[in-house]
Image (cartoon, rainbow, N blue to C red):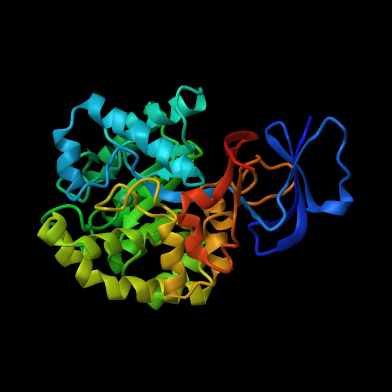
Length: 399
Ligand SMILES: [Zn+2]
C-alpha cells in the first residue's frame, strides 16, 4: 500500500517545480514524482489531495549542536549541567528540530558522546528526532575554540589519536578546528589554530576510515590551511578572499555559513545575557561574513544551510530562520531551498539518499500550507506545516 500526495506544488529540491504534481511513497522510499495524471492510484493506496499546498523534501541543517541549549551563555550552561540534564535537553532539542520540518541534521560537536547516544536513540525508535550525522567531540588544539567540550590535541600524532578516538566512539564525520571563534573567551575568529600539518593528519585519518571532514574556519589563513588539507566543508567562513574562493571551487568543498549564529548574538546582545566578548566579536565579523557569503554564492561555491543551533538564542526548532537570512544575503528563495535540501545532502555525503524528491530516495517529505518560494519566512510557522514524514513515516499529518 502506497501513500500518494496528489495535485501539490512539488518542489523537487534541485531547482525544479512540478505543478499539480504527485509524490508517491512506498515503504521508506519515494516511488514516483511527476504530474498527478500520470499516476492513477490503486484501490488500496492512501491518497491525500494537497491542492494549493507545497510539497518539499525534508529540510537539512548541516550544522547544529544537539547538546548545546541556545541559552544566553550556552557554554556556561553546558559546563554547569549534569550529564543527565544535558541528555534530557538534547532529546528535547531533537524532537523540536523534527517538528520544524528538519528531517536530517549534522551535529558538529557534542559533549561526552551524548550526540551519538541521541542519534542511536532516534535510529532505534526510542526518541523522536531527525536523522543525525554526528562528529562526536570536536578536535581542537589546547585552549583552542571549543576546548571546553572538545578533545584537545597537539601535534600530528596526537591529532591522529584524537580522530581515531572519535572513530572508535562511532562518529560519522570528523570536525577539526582551524581557527578561533566567537563563543570561546580569549580566542579570536581570525586567528589560525591547528597547523596545516595537523589538519592534513586529521583529514587523512578520517579519509582512511571513509569519513568526511568539516572544519570550523573563520580566519582566511585557517580556511586555506583546511582546504589545502582536503577538508570537505568550511563552517562559518567569515573571511573568504578570492584565493579561498578559488580553492573552495578547486577542492569541491562546501561552505556552511551559519548566518543565524552571529545574527542572534547581536540581536539579543549583552542586554539579554549574552557574554560581552561574544557580542563584540560578532559585531566585528558580521559585515565581512555577509560579504563572504555573497562572494561565494556569486562564484558558484556550493553553500549548504546550517544554523549552529544551540548558540545564544539560536534555538533548536527555529532552524529555518537561516533560510530567511540566506535570502537577505541575496539568495533567491529557490536557492535557499536548494541550500537546505540538495546541496546540504551533498555536503553530508548523502546526496544519493536524501535532499531531493526523486524516485528511489528516502521519503523525507514536508507539506506546507503556503508557497515558501513566495514567502521564505512561512517555513518558520510550525502551524502552517501540515505534514512531516521521515523515511516514509509520518511524524505529523494534518492533511
Ligand atoms: Zn558550531
